[in-house]
Structures are given as structure tokens and as C-alpha cells.
Image (cartoon, rainbow, N blue to C red; front, top):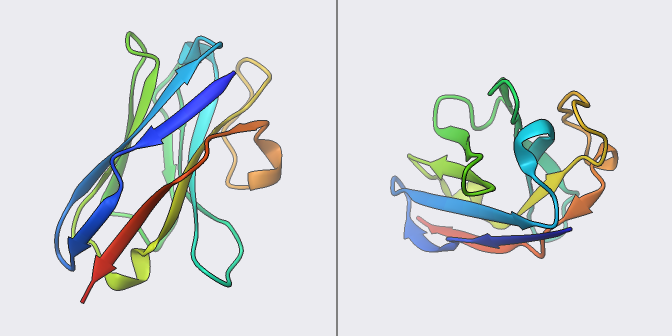
Length: 125
């Protein structure tokens, strides 16, 4: 399975970006997926998850109300819409997918089996 993130870039505080995660080698509709991020010198942290069969979503408190995770099962792609971006959102953003169908989504990175290479998001103040 291959996950490819795109859509990162440089944006001013208050701006928006939409990240995409295109998956090949696995049909995502029965798997949970997540977005995580890692800032320099920090551990990878949970951002958002989605169960692709039900659409059930969860968010980290730091992004709740500003970020939206969604999926398009017909395109085998998951998205992260990021609004009202802050400098503290600066990080490399990764998407990940679980290996077992219908496994619940999780905020723990260790429970995801396959990862993309990441896309850089930089928010200037």
C-alpha cells in the first residue's frame, strides 16, 4: 500500500490549506485513517481520524473547530481542510491507515500500519 500526501505549503496565520492523501494498493472504504503531525524537535502528534465506512471523525483539541477531515471513497483519498491556521500548526503532516478492516480509529500513531512520506505545512506570523 502507498500513501501520498500533497497540498502543504507556506501560508500566513489565519489562512487555509487543504491536504490530500491519495491511497493506492488498498481500498480505503473499510479502513480507519488518520492525520498526524510532527514539528521539529517534537514527537508525532494526533490531529484527526476518520472511519471511512461510517464517516465518524475525531479531532485533537488543538485543531477542533478549525480542521475538518473528510474522505472521498470513490477517489480513494482522504483530506484535511485546515482553516484559521496558526504558527503553532507548523509541522510535517502525515496520513496513515490501519491494516485491519473495520478497526476503530485511534489517536495513537502506533496503531497505524502504513504511512505517507509527509507534507510540510509552514504558517508564518
